[in-house]
Image (cartoon, rainbow, N blue to C red):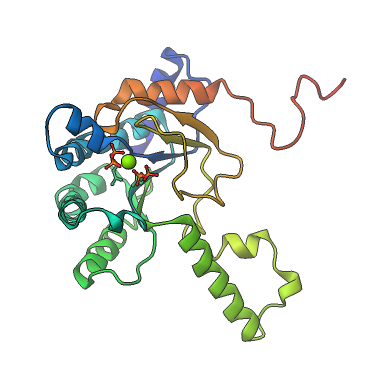
Length: 257
Ligand code: IPE
Ligand code: IPE
Ligand code: MG
C-alpha cells in the first residue's frame, strides 16, 4: 500500500511540474469564521466545513509524497474565544479522532499530537493518547496535530526541562546547545517544517512553530481554509518547488564566482 502511494506520488507530481516536494508541510488552517460569516452562517459552520478540507489535505499530502503534515487545530490563545465556539472546536476534534482513526490506520497514517497537555480534560487526554498509541505502528504520513499549542508556551516548558536538568547536575548551563533545546520541544523527533502555509489571508505566524520555522519557506494564501482544496494545496507545493533555499549560504550558481 505504501509503495503504491509513493509510486503514484512520483508519477503525478511530475505531471503537474512539481520538481521537489517538502518533507514537512505545516498549515495554519485559518479563515473558517470569516468564510462562514460571509455566507450568513454561524462561525461554527466554517469550522465544520474545515474538517472536510482537513481530510482532503491529509489525503493530498499522501498523494504528493509529503512525509509530515502538521495542522494547527487549536492554539493556546484560542481559549479566549466565546465559550460556545471553544466547546464546538473541542467537540469537532473529538469527533474527528473518533470517526477517522480507523481510516487513518488503514491509510498507514501515524498521528502525533503537539501542544501542552497541562490542564486538559481527562477524557481529551485519553483520546489524544489513544490516537497516538493506536497509530504508533503506522509507517506512512505522520499527521501532527497541533492542539492547545503555542510556540512560546512550548519554549517555556522546554526552558523548565533544561533548568531542571541543570539543577539536577546532569547538564552544565554553558554546554546547552541548539540540540538540547530542540530535544526539549514537543517536536523533538519531527524534522523542521520545510513549508509553512497560512490560509485565510493573514500574514502572521500567530505563535506557531517559532523555533522550528527558522528556515521554513512561507506561503500565504488568500483562500479561506474551507475552500483550500487539492488544487490550492498544489499551488502552495508548486511555489515551494520554485524557491531556492540558501540557509545563509550563497546560491549554488554563485558559489564559484
Ligand atoms: C481558524 O479559523 C480555526 C481556528 C482558529 C481554530 P478562524 O476561526 O480563526 O477563522 P477566522 O480567522 O476568524 O476567519
Ligand atoms: C491561528 O489562527 C490558530 C489556528 C489556526 C488554530 P488565529 O485565528 O487564532 O490567529 P489570529 O488570532 O488571527 O492571530
Ligand atoms: Mg483566524
